[in-house]
Length: 115
Length: 111
Image (cartoon, rainbow over all chains, first blue to last red; front, top):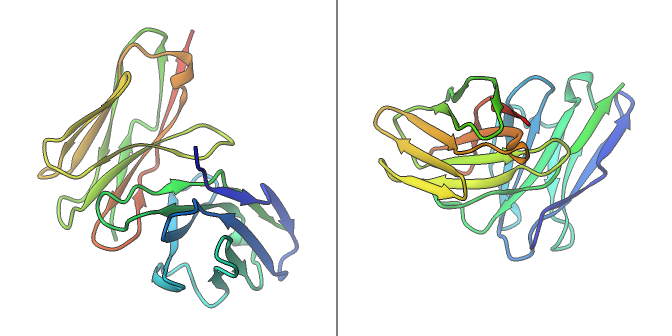
C-alpha cells in the first residue's frame, strides 16, 4: 500500500542552525502539507502546497520557514534559523483532493530537537 | 480561532468491553470531519472522513457518527481488543486546506 515517508526520523540541531526535513508523498497525490505537534499540545497546521506554490499557511509559518518540491517526488520543509521553540514532531501529509472528501495521508513524522 | 475538543483525554478499557468518546467542533463553515488512529512511532492512520449530517461510518469494530448541526462526532469501539490501544484524533475541516485537530483521546485496552 502506498505510504508517505519522512526522513530523518529524528534530527538534533543547535539553535540558529538550518534544518531541512524531507518527505516523499504518495506518488499520484497533488496536495502536500506540513503539520507539527509540540510535546503536550495539539497537532497544528503549518502549510499546504499545490501546483508548486503555497496555497495556505498558518501564522506559525513565518519567514523562517520555507517549503519546496525540488524534484517532483520530494517535498521539503526548511527552517532557516532554528529556535528552541521549534522543537516538535513534524508531520508531512499528502492528498489527492482538497475538497471535503480529501483524505490526508500522514507520514510517521520527524522529531526535531533544538538544543 | 477554531476550537476542536476531544473528551476524555484518556481512557482505560477492559478487553471485550465497548467504549466511545467525543469530538466537538464548530457547527459553522463545516466541510468535513476526519478521524485518525495514531499508534506511537507510526503514521496517523485515516479511519473516516465524514461530511454529511447524520452520517454513520463503520470499519470493522470501529464506527463513528456525525452531528454537524450541534458540532459533535462520536467514535465507538465495540468489543475492544489490545490492538485498539492508540490515540484517536479528530480533525475539523472548513473551507481551505488545513485540518484543525483536537487533542486526541488516548485509549488503553487492558487484557
